[in-house]
Length: 98
Image (cartoon, one colour):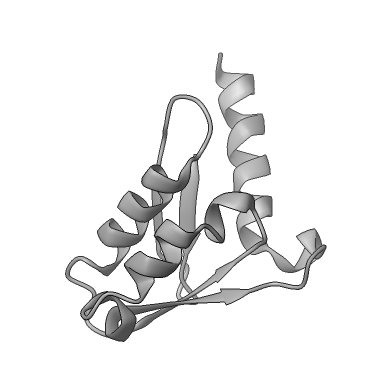
């Protein structure tokens, strides 16, 4: 699962088969900015797919740089990543429902 949680508690997520790769991450970023009323500041951890040259190039695109900006957490700070709590809770509930 890849997800984003706003300060207002709004959730956007996508269930994917397999792991998140660069292309899936960029697709998710594109979906986040589609129709967004203002610039998104997305707090991300240091997962490898957040740093590749393809992501940097996509973010540097004429439109995307005024629509979204990535803000990186410190190298190891899972307690600061609210998305980790969301994912863990979702996985537990999914497993319990099966």
